[in-house]
Length: 280
Picture 1 (tube, one colour):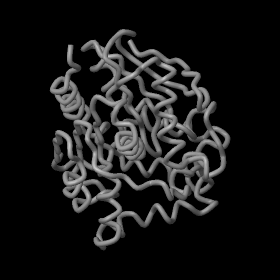
Picture 2 (tube, one colour):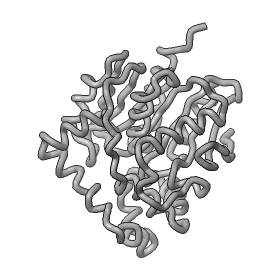
Picture 3 (cartoon, helix red, strand yellow):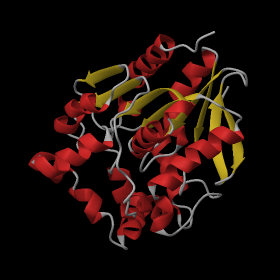
């Protein structure tokens, strides 16, 4: 049974959903843009059924209790700090971390800065930040794919997304996301200030965003039809992980992996967690 609750933390109060026994092995799942924690409902249910304690918060900008409106509040230190603040509030000394899209970027940053807190990392769609940065510099295809990020920095983007019953926002899901999820995401992002807060992930300057090699056991899952993240960075991610690494390429699947291939992704996550069980 899925639980809805709030997590008061040092960063503010996060809305969250969870499943599984309170004393189960802890797994934190982070969503990206323009989605919310409900993205993970299938994974939460499966993990909970297997005895894990799986928690998915609405992240900074999405949770009303953590919704700063200035872009400089969305730097790496703030976003990684939220992960640790949530884990600390849940009394999790070590945990498994899963992230998709921006949640994946935050997960990579957290693994780089606080490997001692993580048992495993699972990044979905989002390659290692250094691999993506290199692709931006050297690969014309990735630069074209990423142009939208610059376009979305303009002040009027939020209003355009929400006009006409959020028609433009709804189009981003490409018909690949279940209607019940789309409605939940749009409902949250239609709250006063929510969409502009979420767009601050794109507007923030991140001079402290350098990421080295990852020592944490890592699973990276990428869909070959991802419109935003191409093969150059996906295939280069391996060289940025010095710990145990597994890359799973999903043929015919696009950017919305948790929605497009939920059962496949759930199986991969569970296998990864079981492969790296905590020592007795």
